[in-house]
Image (tube, rainbow, N blue to C red; front, side):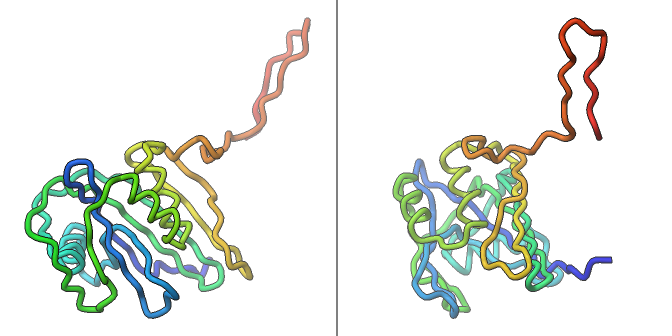
Length: 199
């Protein structure tokens, strides 16, 4: 039986104003430099995803979530070094109200700003250091991933880097589609043999 446990769940929101995207500039206690990301954070004990997202958006940006849109994508990260698994849910916030004003109680968020998708892509590409956060978000904003895509990552024991195990509905440009099961055998010409697939 595996010793892995779900360390925590994270919920994140994508807010738009016209063609602009809302990003927050943040720097945690272990971050060497600030980075840009979508607003969101850990789900607290007893919270539903919807309540957690509303709280995180309000704390980090000052905006109130009025209506939640569809689930844009989700991801799982399993870390063999810590025996922990993390699950992230990213939702579209279809309606919001208020004025930008961060009130982050942890004082991690330094700024919240709407910016063009092109600028957001540039900042995320250059400044978001974690592959598991950066890769699915860039694919979504570029239109390379289907709504509801699932991304599965893991970090092997003794390794410092994360690897993408499977992307369901993710972009195909980098070969991230689910691998085919089994091996297809091509029948020989002029015979009655049938192709068989090993399960």
